[in-house]
Image (cartoon, rainbow, N blue to C red):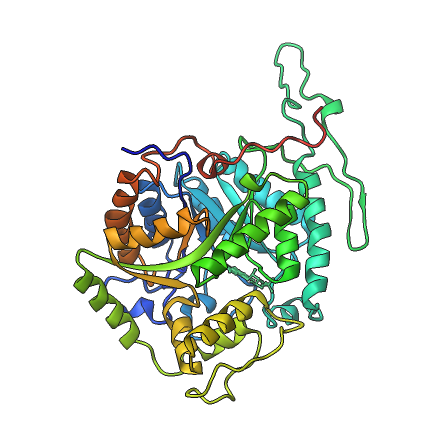
Amino acid sequence: MPANTRQMNFGVFVHTTGNHISGWRFPGAITRDEDFPAIHNVAMVAEKAKLDFVFFADTPTSMNDGLPVHLVRFEPATLLSALAVTTSRIGLVATLSTTYNEPFNLARQTASIDQLCQGRAGWNAVTTANMEAAPNYGRAIIEHDKRYEIAAEYLEVILGLWDSWEDGAIIANQETGEYFEPKKVHTLDHKGEFYQVKGPLPHSRSRQGRPVIVQAGSSPAGQAFASRYADVVFTVQQDMEEARKFREGIKRQVAAAGRSPDEVKVMPGILTVVGRTEEEAKAQFAALAASIKPGSAMKVMSERYGHDLSTYPMDGPVPELPPSPLRTQGYAEVMLAKARRENWTLKDLHDLFALSRGYLMVVGTGESVADTLEEWFKVGACDGFMLTPAYFPGPLEDFCNLAIPVLRKRGLFREDYAGDTLRSHLGLPVPKNRYTA
Ligand SMILES: Cc1cc2nc3c(=O)[nH]c(=O)nc-3n(C[C@H](O)[C@H](O)[C@H](O)COP(=O)(O)O)c2cc1C
């Protein structure tokens, strides 16, 4: 087997009822998002294939935008607690909002989960762009860049709290009765513009030091935030060269922030349809395309585009609109670039959102899908991929059974986990505790 020093990382974006807008309607698909045995099975499929992590998105709302997962689902921290004790190797990443959670509570929950799963936890730090969340908290909507400004202070608080207990602070010496070393426990005493948090946190560090931080915003403010704090950056690029430039830009900003560029993984979302033959894969994709109900992804598309697109003609061009001051920005830029390149109508964009919620799509055999992934990886367009299967578990199993063995044969993906923590899967070092000399 050829020896590659750099290998791909894979996360699985678990929208249990499917990333495709009608994924849940396909034969054998999971039809409910509050189905723990089914979610556990998905995690086990990913763990058996030695993938890096399963990921759960969230916004604190119940929305009717056509995707069943946005109506009802598990609260992600609660879900991770259940998976923490029923899986053994796979990384577990939950989305929790910086805008709608007290930092002390969030630091506690994530640190607890990281202890429960023995160092396999990750946190997708989102500022929550969705407009429907604010009224659930009796709060006003906070403007886009301001949300990131607040989130930066939030992250400083979280990182400080996670380091409250230095490694070795708990002694628990039954003979001497000495339980802990007070010098190794630290009070944060944070007094900032947005938060006052004393600490310490009633949690020590897990085997991986602290949960992995994931981030998915790609506006200028989002990239600056990611470069300072993220271990993993999810992206939405559709074009390899665009993705290469994006990753290069992130790595440059990471270095400028005083961090090692190798310690941040950039992972574009990708929907794969893998068949035993090209014809089989094409037929599966045709079935996915044929199942799109006209207009069904209008709300999802408008949310991600940052503007209501329902008043524009579907057979007209994708409208050129300025970045939204409130909603998401990064998606719109990528989508507009693709629409311009390919001379798309609004219907073309709509159908991309219906099929894959806007992510890159690759259709083919294990070999040909692996070829595309390898090309993106080798030109430096990514460090791995965030898999967004059309539905579960079939298309994920197809990827694991047909494409993963090809990547393994090429030395591009691990034969087995090298360690037990999510950081070890991602090849990230255990971060030093800020108080330890
Ligand atoms: C792969 C991916 C997953 C995301 N998951 C969530 C999520 O679960 N909850 C959420 O509120 N936002 C989610 N987002 C949105 C981002 O966190 C961010 O708000 C959005 O991309 C806009 O940021 P930007 O304006 O900096 O691009 C996700 C984005 C991407 C690309």
